[in-house]
Structure formats: structure tokens, C-alpha cells
Image 1 (spheres, rainbow, N blue to C red):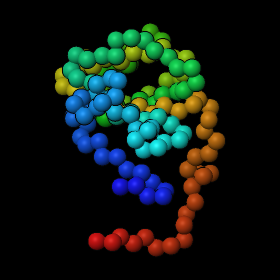
Image 2 (image 1 turned 135 degrees about the vertical axis):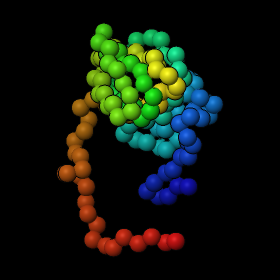
Image 3 (image 1 turned 180 degrees about the vertical axis):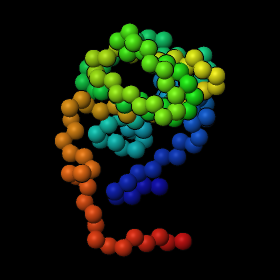
Image 4 (image 1 turned 90 degrees about the vertical axis):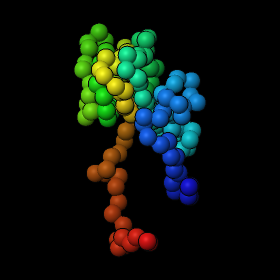
Length: 139
């Protein structure tokens, strides 16, 4: 379902990302092209027990926000190891050398939002506009 001002993708449960994903990395489901995002890349991620991203990486321009929504693991940034679990949020600057592993029991689920560092010029307080009309829901 898409409209003039929105687009929708049904990726299904996070527990199915390993089999659903046709992206270059199993368990990583990119949303930019699927939703027509113009200011960010977002990926839904499932990392199986014992799995890892077995290389360090950094970015040229984009910072990343990691939002952990299930399981346990560790994110390493610039040699520092950070334990992660549901509710952990971590921002990594473009230059940060990062790697990730699932050292918990069960799958690790997380969302990564990638956006050009320093590009935010407005946020809800300065960009949001209340529209003066009642909210209705059609049943």
C-alpha cells in the first residue's frame, strides 16, 4: 500500500529476516529503496546466536544509530566493548571503527539508522506542525 505522501513495506517478524532477506548480508533487510527513503538508510537486522559482523568498518560521511530491540550481544567501537540488549541505543560517528557480535543465547535483533553526519537542521520541536482538524478513523 502506497499513497502520495507515504509508502509501506511489510517485512514481517524480525525472527524471519534471515530467510526473508535477499540483501547482500543474510539477516539484514534494507528499507531505503523499498520505501523510497530520501534522507536516511534504515535496516532491520537479525543476528543469530554466535553470529557476528566479522570485520571492522567505518563510514565516509554517515553516522549510525543502533537500536537494540531483542537479545544480547556486544558492539565494539574504537576498541571499547559495549554490552547491548533490548533498549540499548548507540550512536557511532562516521569515523568510529565498529564490529558487532551476538554472544548471547538466541537471536539478536536491532535496527540501524544511517544518516549523513551533521545534516539534521530541524526536529520535532521546530519542524512539527499541528493541523487543526479532528482525527477520525474509518472502521
